[in-house]
Image (tube, rainbow, N blue to C red; front, side, top):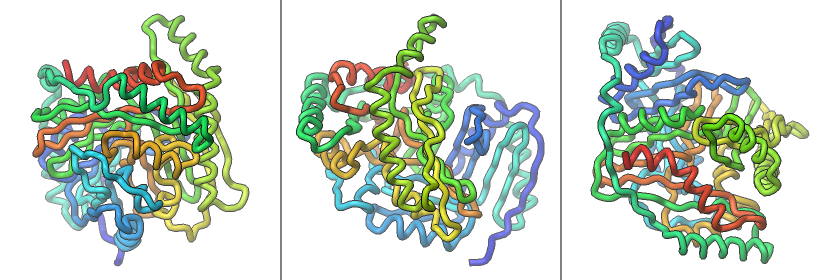
Amino acid sequence: MPYILRTTQKFRIPNVEQYKQKLLFWAQQFNEVVWLDSNDYHNQYSSYNAVLAVEAFTCIQTDYHNAFEKLKEYQSCTKDWLFGYLTYDLKNAVERLESNNFDGLEFPDLFFFQPKKLFLIKDDEVEVQYLGMVDDEMEADLKEIESLGGTSETHSTSNNIKVKLRMHKDEYFEKVNAVLDHIHRGDIYEANFCQEFYAEDTQINPLETYFKLDAISKPPFATFLRLDDKYLLSASPERYIKKEGLKITSQPIKGTAKRSRNPEEDLLLKEQLSKDEKERSENIMIVDLVRNDLAHTATKGSVVVEELCEVYTYPQVHQMVSTVTSQIEASTNPVDVIATTFPMGSMTGAPKISAMQIIEALEDTKRGLYSGAVGYFSPQGDFDFNVVIRSILYNAEKRYVSYSVGGAITAKSNPLNEYEECLVKAKAMREVLEN
């Protein structure tokens, strides 16, 4: 397929935060929306402040059967910007696994679209790209966006939703002990075990709920995604994988500590996390797994751990993050890099296949988009994907709201401590839905 012409315009934005909110309001008219926001986290691994892609020109939607082959064909043919998601259940496409647990959300296993309209924000500048020769349409849209008001009214409404537990505390303890039995038998070293919180027969305002969640968490990989009547409202702190040129970067998170309003106590909590043997062992095990995954496509000797067990601080929590990079050949297909590393090690365990089998048997809910990934491909074949955690998922037609949280279980895990860590991770989502 020949390169598709995009009409492009660049201009400076006087107030970036205000413009971002206007863009999101304007985007609500479309059935396909992906909004990615770094919340001004700037480091050597950052690309954009925020990106908005709306309105599908072409798309691919499929279940897990041959999903990565179909995505590779679609990406190779379009050679354009593609935005979308990969659900956790694509594990069944890369290994002989199944997903038979309850699914209240019913997201398709894989969805990507080629956006007609694209906004790339970097620093105080926005680059607008529209498919085709559409100067008049672009000008009309830009005037409409500029005319939109502020967002003060979006934070006033209360959701007041009663969230239910899919798995009660005693059952959670039993299942964590079952994971520990597998570890003590030598079946696995580590498993990421998750539980769902949900509400049925309920309605939320997706954009308002996203704004509230984002305001509490201010994460570096925030996402608002809409596919028809299905929504993802994500405050993810974690990058899954990025390709820039021939460099691949993965940044797994393992290790969480709560924040304190007392600065001295907060610093102590951060230092305790950085020295915690259990948390460091969790992280290092996943780093080894990521190194192994990246090696499938890496040039010889190019896999490097650039950061090991660095503690990053966010409004809700301290997190232990490692950064693993590799180099690939120019001939390597970008989709192959994803297929050989999916699902991400931070959401599975080690060894990966055994861990996925065990958690599938013990968890009550099909993960779906939770612990999958949202992101994009560029026309040059670069990509950037987050990990879908700290997220609210909503099926408006089914009136079903859900969020899940999990933690890494290792030989040193204490079930009560693991349960309390889950509640720390769930705090922002519960607060947004119940207040």
